[in-house]
Image (tube, rainbow, N blue to C red; front, side, top):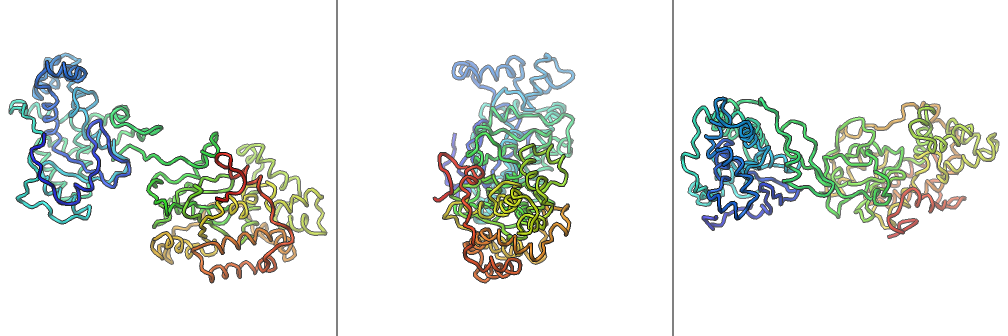
Length: 601
């Protein structure tokens, strides 16, 4: 019962919106802080033991029969009226309790069997039940006002908001039924109880060391106080008994959302085992029988729910544009050479990715960030990357379908390199068959599937996003400059990556391709650029629609492109009409419900 109605000043009362107590978890998993109130574990155990024991057994039996049976098993059937009784009869080698009661004595202290609420829902339960990596604040019972002031300061409140003469913390919920005899422990019994309480003491120490409002001096202070009661366990780093696996206790007591379970038990003390529930993947909604590959998913360290709706970004990864380099830096599990993540807002706001036939973005995303590259350079790189270096191995790992896609261009036709495609398949003097000449043109235009990176081109990715999408672009030739401008448009630092940055390493590089496979003669370059004309116009449209690129930057990229395909770069239209890729979009991009074709919302 409350003994005071005095209003507590400061921000903590305003910011503490929900509570977690015993089996009632009423907190949001994305709470900024988790405020623990802790106490010397031995003192807490004795107090909890005495508080859980009904003072009127007959009334308890009539009012709550389940709780009555639960407590009766320990306090009545085993005769453990006090913690001293439990230790001297249930833990001591000289005790006279039955084997069953000895087991109950131990499990009651470990918190592995339930004989009451306060003793069962212990420090281990509460620490493991919060989300993994939770930010913890702590109020120590022995230093309430001091720790309250420190926590208040962390949440940007006034320093020393509670003065020395504060009257805010009277003693509430006192167990008036507990006398001095019930609190007493002989030295021998205390040693026995502390030994069984060892893991709980280690968890208590973990909570203290995790608290961001406590300094090292305060932690040492609590450790010294703990040594007065349980000196061996206070100084220990490990215990004779392993840490209990309380997974089932967490599931039944804490509760988890649908399809959400605690992180697997490792035997180590951990801050939180509750894993954030992430929103459903749009790809899996569009294709219910398919699972989104792991490389399309964000690293678990990023909580997708935290990205503001007006900043939520779709990362558009067009193949062979350094998309893996950017994707790894912002937290996607691609072919990453390092685990280094980029600083800033983009890694937090880029929640979903669109790559080839896997559209896993929300159509109402605030931004669609494309990574692009000179179209001719991208085409040559994609052609070489899509060609298997070991055909038998490729067939074994990717199956007949993808094997046949590639076989029709690379093996059935005499196209070992893009130079071969141009010279033998596009030139009027070419010696390839009529069918292979058709395939040569289709492979460049992206109208027939011979390999994912060539087929899923700029036109496909641009037409697949909503027509009114707000675009930003990172150019392969200007990675750092454009990454910084995207970051700035999201509200971040304008120079988040400095000139000496090492974040944007080269990932997913095709190490098999030699210079001879990248080479194009001047005549072949003209033939390829001619077939690439529409793709070049789409590339220019992406640049011009990008809100993070200035007019000077767009013109810079166009000048760079004109060095390889001058005629097509200068053109605004092409001899061949833009391909109709409606079927490609439906089959590759996928659409939720009955919506087909290009997204024009």
